[in-house]
Structures are given as C-alpha cells and as structure tokens.
Image (cartoon, rainbow, N blue to C red; front, top):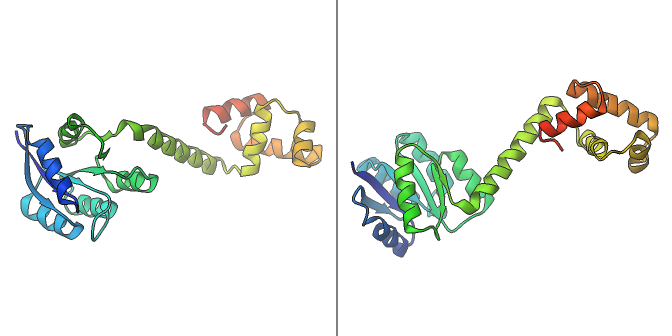
Length: 212
C-alpha cells in the first residue's frame, strides 16, 4: 500500500520540510506539490493523490475554500490542514468545509505521519490543543439548537439561572426590577415551554439540556 500525497503551501521551505518529514515513511509517497489554490486544483486533477496537505493562507482561494472545492470535485481525496493559524474562523471553517484533519505546524513528525495514515483510513484528527475549542463550539451550537427548539428567550434563560441559584419569586422580581406577578407569569411560561410541572423539574431539564 502506498498513500499518494500532494503538499500545498506558498512557502517553498515548508513544502520541502513536509516532504522531508514524510520521506522516511515507506507507505507514503509525495507525488507533487503546489504553491497556490488554483495550482493545487490542477495538480489534484492530474496526479490523483489520496491525501492533500494544505495551509490555510494561500494565493487564490484560501484553505477553507480550497478544501470545499476539493471535497466537491474530488470527494475521494482526504484533506489534512497543516497551518500556523489556530484562529477559530479557520479551524471551524475548514472542518465545516470537509477537512479530515487540522494540525498546527508545530506538530511532531510522528503526528503528521499518523494524520496521513488515519485520514487515508477515513478517520479524523485534530491537534490536541485545538480539541477543547472545537468541543466548546459544538456545545454552544447544541445549546443554541435547544434554545431554538424550546423557543426560549435570553430573559427566560436568565430567569432559569436565577431559579437554579435558589432565588425566590421575590428575589427575582427585585433583581430584574419587575413585579412579583410578572415573575410568576414568566416562570409559568417557562414551565410550559419545557413541559415540566415545577421549578425543580425546570432546573433539572435545563441542566440536562445544557442550558444552565
């Protein structure tokens, strides 16, 4: 088995360095390189690599758009992002575009080789320092989806937090500068939206759903 790899980076020293790192792996063959997005698309079509290793900052389409185009035109090709940029915009953009791995350039030789093999097998891989950021983003997305499903407002989430903290109707009314009648009405609306009978059940459901 030989895994055919194309290296895409606008810095020649990086392209040479990546090829050098992969040269000792008998199961990996670097079949070509490219220095821009358009050139990468041409080389992929001509060379039919199994894995493309690319940077985020490239002349022409950036790494996110290049990944998107590669996945659309050549769905069988796996994409490994190897970049110095840990920005959330690039990281999440690349993953949403279909990248199979996102590694920082300080990744070890072993991690880069492992990434090539794992994405070739259809697996996914992230630099360890980026995993918590991705998990936080997906947790936030899941929370937003729950909020939308239950049609909860930011004010209602605030009230839920007060209830979870043990605040009484009187406490909440004082903190929000509302009347107690208004607080009672809003709490009843929250219970109805969550389909629960009392405050304790509302807190339990909110915690279970990651709302508070």
